[in-house]
Length: 148
Image 1 (cartoon, one colour):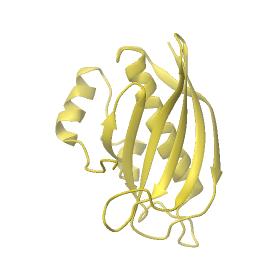
Image 2 (cartoon, helix red, strand yellow):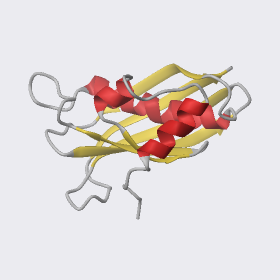
Image 3 (cartoon, one colour):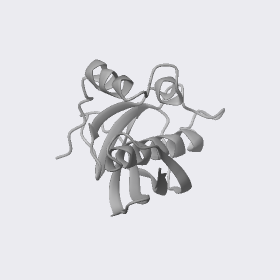
Image 4 (cartoon, one colour):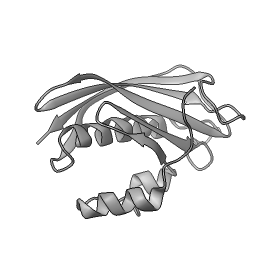
């Protein structure tokens, strides 16, 4: 069973700030992304649907893409040792269905971890009312990050 309890964000944010990174005031903050697990080869988070919808009331595809890039980029940053810049250079996403309410759960799993490139396969599911995934598969994505 996959853990969907958010990390102690205050401790996580302090760790990031010590490295010169921030979450407050960024797109991560605006989208309401809460990290669950952050490792070099795996990263997961939850994100609310509310506030991240398009005019028809469905989860915005751009919000799903931003969640996917966030997950892979943080994992790549850790793969680079937490002191190198990791930036997405290629993202593709396929939206299989959408969500209208609740939260979504995203996870990035390493496909290949090289010296200067890291590639991740990302899935985003509707989070079930029980708080446990997997719910319906909403999006699959692949992200390649440059590590400098």
